Structures are given as structure tokens and as C-alpha cells.
Length: 213
Image (cartoon, rainbow, N blue to C red; front, side):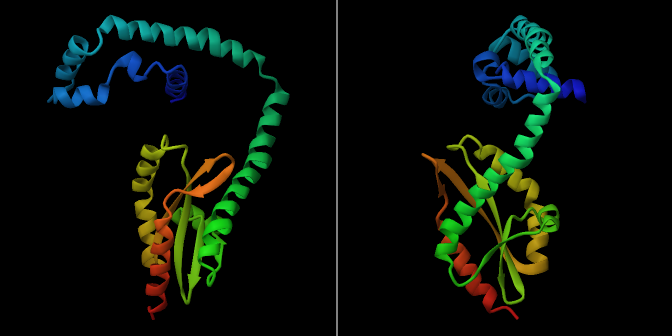
């Protein structure tokens, strides 16, 4: 497992699995429509990249790990590790908190002034993957904030949404309210809600929940 993590991290870092190196694998396998792995292997080496090319990429990966990364690791000191942990736990946690405040309270709270948007507890975060909630009568509406880097992370976000679907469903069943994603993007240091239509959706959900017993 540790070996695979190192290999995967290095491969991604040096972009050895990028399209320019290995070709359009997703598109190619759809064109091939293989019924088994042998068919795909033959198609790939014949039409996308030769086997020798992939072997060379593997050799390049080995050099990057054993020479470049090892040299970098040897330069890391104990103080570097201490400073990094402090940076992650204190500075970046605070920066993330400020981002959430600016996005939620700075924009959404101005739009939904009749109900307070409150941060979820650690327990709710673990159980339901909820960042914030709106308390309406005896029911709750869930909200999760997702920073987006100009569209680059969208596929990962959609994948994460599928993974979290079950926990969000549990939230709706237990508390009666819907669950909403708010996507935020940073433009010149200013946080903006990418999907402002969610504000109207939340307002409508508040109206619906108010009518529940």
C-alpha cells in the first residue's frame, strides 16, 4: 500500500500519466470496447502508444523517485516537519474558516436574513458530511461548501457527491430538510458563490419545511 502511494504520487506529480504521455486512455478504451483486458492491451499498444514507450515512462518514474524525490527528502529537517504541521493546523485551518465565513455569512446570510445559518458540530460533520445548517421549527436544512478552482475540481466534486449521497439521505430522513451544495470560487481574492440559484432553492425549502408538522 505504501509503495503504491509513492508510485501514484510521483506519477501524478511528474505528469507521467497525462494525455501527452500515455494518450487519451478514456477515449481510446471506449473506441476499443474490449470484452477482456487482453483485447484492450493489444489495442492500446497498437493504436495509442507502443509498449516500449510505457516501459520508458516506468524507467523515468524510477529515476524521479530514486534520485529527485530521495534528494528532496534528505533535505527535510525535523523543524520543517514541525513548521508544516503548525501551518496546516493553525494557519490553513483559520484561512479555511475565514473563507467559509465570507462565503456563507457574507453572502448567503444576507440573502436569508430571517434564519441563522449555523456551523455544524463535528459529530454532524462525521455522520452527515454537513458544514452548516438552518434550523426551521423542529427541522434542519443541511449545507456543504465546496471551493472550486475554476472548474478543475468539478469531476472530483461530483464523484464526492455520489460518495456522500447516503449520508445526506440519512440527514434528510432524520431532520426533514433537504441538503444543498454551495460551490465557491476565488476571483482576485474575493469569494463568489458559483451556483447562486441555490439561494432561491434554499428559500423554497425553508417555506416547505415551515409547513411540516
